Length: 265
Image 1 (cartoon, rainbow, N blue to C red):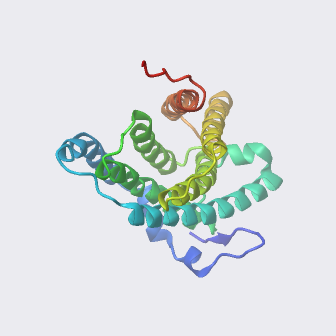
Image 2: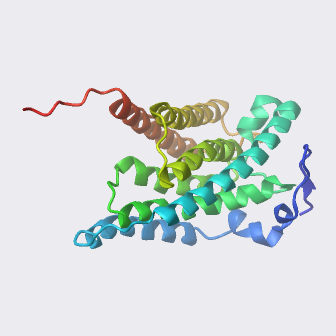
Image 3: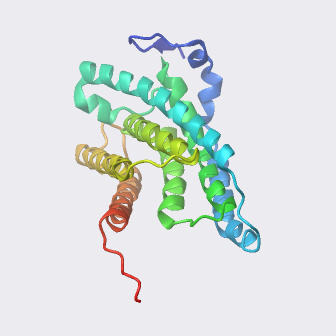
């Protein structure tokens, strides 16, 4: 496969050229076993982890959490910039349909690098849940359900090169650039104004609206040569994003607007 560079203000850096055709083979032709096995281990951790920590004191992982979140923040900021730049050129060249219908881009630098590392990062982010368990924090359904399903769905979409994959990656990286920056500041012990929390959750809800809209467009357009999809793809993606939207909206309302019962004297 001959690779081309994506036009832009900045040409690919050396590390963005580091992946060759062999490195991407696992995405297009790889086995389903590794992602499924990792996800099964993740579910086992969710079930067994809290029980193992029941009689233990939660670990103080502030320093590690700060570095962990900082690493993911820097990665997401760099990745979102590159993907947004590519999306801009796609829009100018092919319009909105081109952005919505593009699958995974593996024939152009630097998008190829950020696409592949993004897919890997979704499984790395299972570590977020491990940190919650080790610190004996409350593990809510929204957290682990989101981590589990998004990792499997983006791999499934990329593996089949379904339309919307590139847009899903771009939006997710952009939201995570803000989200992990927030987590970094919070882990470092700084308190942020309430509106920052509201802003982050609003971004997450916006991501789900974009996801639902993209799936709706793919379903409406039907499987075409320039907009590849399938019934299983739109069904699983539609269900996933619809539940995300509901759960994040519910979290938003309960956290920021619902009146909490007053303690009786």
